[in-house]
Amino acid sequence: MIPAAFEYHRPKAVADAISLLTQHGDDARAMAGGHSLIPMMKLRMAHIGHLVDLQDIADLKGVTIGASIRIGALTTQAELINNTALTTAAPILKEAALQIADPQIRNVGTVGGNVANGDPGNDMPGLMQCLDATYTLTGPRGSRDVRARDFYQSAYFTSRKDDELLVAITFAKPVGGYAYEKQKRKIGDYATAAAAVQIAASGGRVTAASIAMTNLSDTPVYSAAAGAALVGTACDAAAIKSAVTAMLLDINPASDNRGPVEFKRHLAGVILGRAIARAFSRA
Image (cartoon, rainbow, N blue to C red; front, side):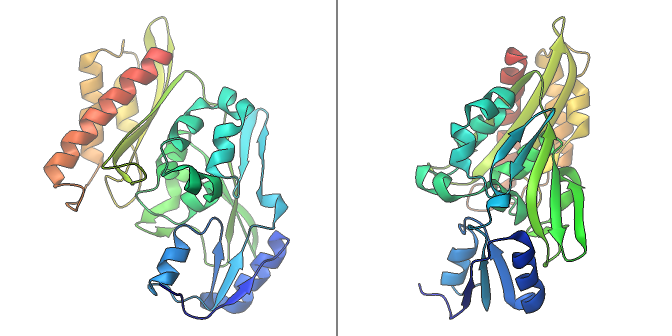
């Protein structure tokens, strides 16, 4: 598997990368970790005339923790796992990142790349919807913010324009209990179903809940109704069943090599029920 010939660019600044994307238009693509783009190029399913490698742009790296949390787009999954301050502030990130692929991929794969390309099987998009994260996009017209819950349009189609870069992810510090539950066929595979849950509780009752699921539709699925079904309850079996029922109305799985639709819907309910119970136990 050898890609077609292409020009390689390695800019040092965001402005330089945007200039290259603007100059070369549809013939250019930006690359973060490269785990999605490079295989497509090798299979010649993607023909790229100009590859813009973002790895030397220092402004796209790093984590800042204050009243809110800001993660640079080139921060790797391994850096999420190994950042103890981030784990203290938002432990669901480490729990999810540890379930992505394998150590080799996590050492290179970036958070920005995971959320930006619109792959419905990626783990971070649903998690960022659960956290109500905001994506900062920068392009020739300046910068703008888009909520993760509004970013995904269909499989591999997002609100990001071709000449824009996703430069950072920002979200408020999550409170309460958390869980990222994932079922996959084998180590390193995409999820057959995965659930991200954050629950706040007081006096044994749920005061707030946020729920999103992965790889059960052509976009990640944030279900406000599922979270609302838990609020005010003691998160007992009946409440969990109501939340699962609400989520099942929002997903639209397709039959593929991970199983038929009926299996995926059943599995989604099992995975979500586990995630809710575990998140509440930690709240």
